[in-house]
Image (cartoon, rainbow, N blue to C red; front, top):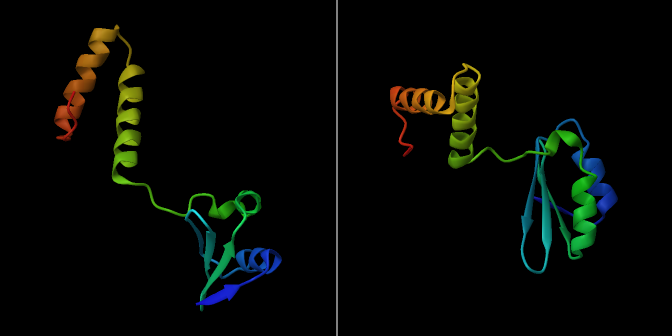
Amino acid sequence: PKQIHEIKDFLLTARRKDARSVKIKRSKDVVKFKVRCSKYLYTLCVFDSEKADKLKQSLPPRFERARPLKKFELEALFVGQVLMAVCYSGGNAIQVFRRFVVLLNFLNTDLKV
């Protein structure tokens, strides 16, 4: 691991071709920006929260979602897509709800409806 002391150097490192991900770790005193490159993990410590917010906005757009989705987020996306598919099939609200429940039971999900 390597520590970077200047914001400019960190942004240049984050824009390199071998930079894979950026993780942001917040505590009450400091915000740490960690960029994973092919050889090293580079860390920048920012003690001013306003500067940290500006730095977060100036990161390259490919790092907007560096973390994978959590289980409940995936379930919410899945349920939303199923509900949209059932709603587009037409019918009144009761028919749509019944089809939604039948489809969820068919898919054997653990969701309580």
